[in-house]
Image 1: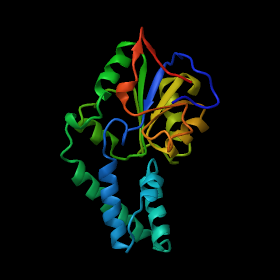
Image 2 (image 1 turned 90 degrees about the vertical axis):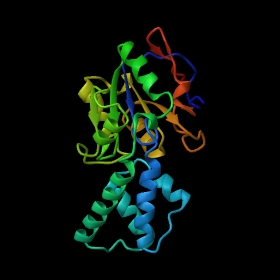
Image 3 (image 1 turned 90 degrees about the horizontal axis):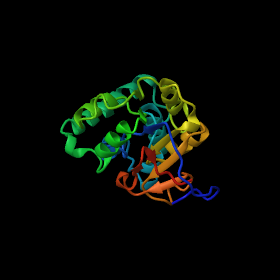
Image 4 (image 1 turned 135 degrees about the horizontal axis):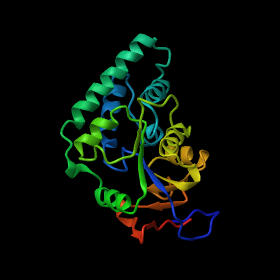
Length: 229
C-alpha cells in the first residue's frame, strides 16, 4: 500500500530504524497479558481499542491510560510505582522463554541483507527491556544504535526516539526509514520527518507511506531497499 499523497518510486535510504515489539518479535502479546492482569485488579477489562491505544506508549504512559479508563487516575505516585514494577516483573517472567525462533519471520534475513548492503541499522523502541529481548532472540549487537525507554524522556507519538537514533547514526531523518506496527509509532516517525513502513493492518496504519503484512515483503535490489512512496 502506498501513501495516498505520494507517487510510487524506488528510494535509496541510508538507515532503517526498527521498532521492537510487533516488528522484530511478537512480545506485544506478553505486554497485553501483563497489562490485562493488572487492569483486572482495577475491575477493568481491556478492550481491543485499548490494546491499540497502548501500542508504542511508554510503561508509565500506558499505566496512566489504563488508570484513566478504569477510573483510578487519582492513585498516589507510590502506588503507581508499585504497579509499574509489578507489570514489568510479570512481563519479564513471560519473555524469559524467548529464543531466536521467536524472531519475526524474515527479520534476521532482512537485517543481514541490509548490513551487507552498507545500510545502517537502529532500534527505536519504548521498551525498557529492549536489550534483554534482543539478547533472547539472537539480535544482540545487530544494531548500530539502540534507543529505548531507558534513554528517552518522551514516548511516541513524540518523535524523540527516532530523532535520537538518527542522531546516533549521524543522519538526517529524511535519509532514514522507520518500520513500525503501531499508529503512535507511525505518527512519531512522520512528525520527525522520517519515511515510514507500517507492518500490519493497512486500515489501522493508513498514515504510513507504505504498509506490508510481513517483513518478508521487503527486499533489496543492488543495495537499495525497494520502498514505494
